[in-house]
Length: 184
Ligand SMILES: [Zn+2]
Image (tube, rainbow, N blue to C red; front, side, top):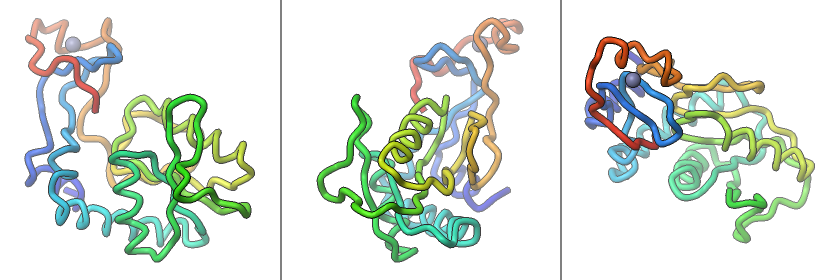
């Protein structure tokens, strides 16, 4: 088991069982990232693992980008380990920089996230970065349920499976929904 999944398991963040997401998709479990974010020391341990992966794979990065609230916090923790500047993108339409740092020169950026579910938000932020004249070296996340069209560095394969509602094997077996209205 990867260091990430060991940490998630130990914190109780893994929630196995028939799951229905707010977006309508079904799954055989989900992850409560709040169990990591509410514990700053645990978050820092995960951020250190993620920072090492970023340094090994995107060593030429000049800017770390995250979306508040959790994504921005995670990005700042990783920035501490890598010694790189951080900027936040606010994701309400139209997307825009948080005023704390509006990067002036073209940067070689990494978009940082915790859990990628559909990838819609990730695609929107990377599109925004390109529109602002920045290179996007790739995306760094703990885990992803989506397959993205850009270099995506995750810390492990997602431990749970996602299904379209009509194809859900747990529904076909008549298994009751345990987790409803989930946003991972
Ligand atoms: Zn189902």
